[in-house]
Length: 371
Image (cartoon, rainbow, N blue to C red):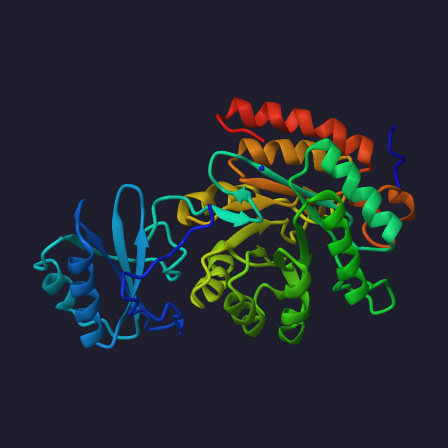
């Protein structure tokens, strides 16, 4: 191991009185979707009339109110071919459009305006970039409190730390479990930083949700659909990491599972994919950042620590991620990386993390954003 030198939660509101069950079942093949674009100034009575007609066809509407337009997303296994033309004759309807992407609710076709996820007042998405920092795993009270203080002092917005760790080998450190969650909560109480931590199984969701502010779905669980639906039902912010060999479409379809439960608070995370290259742990795919920002309204952040596996590569890739349009970063920081119980080789020490932060702010300012 080389020695180290010493950034508004989207609210999807049904019209009053509420008539929408905002849980959607995504069944894959055969699912169709469209959006009904309302005219500027359309009122609740006109919107309600559209929703009632959809219900007559046994379809559910997904109402999205934006600053510039209001749309109703429609997802169903059998949308009548004449329905689009029928709805276009309704008062207050501007046009209807078919959603062509296999992912419907997370598509930018449904919502052209960026979603902003609110985590205890920290906004993920929009004009500001967030930095989430902390150790790969919670090891002790002293370790997590020391790290939390250091990253807060350097300007981090949230604290990361694993209490349950999926490891390739069953003989390596796999986390402290609920004790780790309690220590994370203690660190939040002391520093005010919201905490991001991974949940690994559907049975653990209730436990982790009692302590966490953001439920992280790790790369190995990106296609654990029961887990995705369970975290979706919590309504809590969800950080969804891209799988090691997942395509961008598969990644966005996994996000669809969460949003289909009525939970719009999803943060996508690019963390590197597995390629033929062996010089780095993974290959950080900045193509995915730019393309995902174009195809979905969900915020996209980057994990340069897992993306490279080398602590000295994390800073330049973090800078490149902000330049590529990422809405934030999640970076591993440990007070003593040489003695870390997991992923020490890719963790920055507090001094190097503090040195990185002003550089990130400079790059963000250069592309018209702030940190």
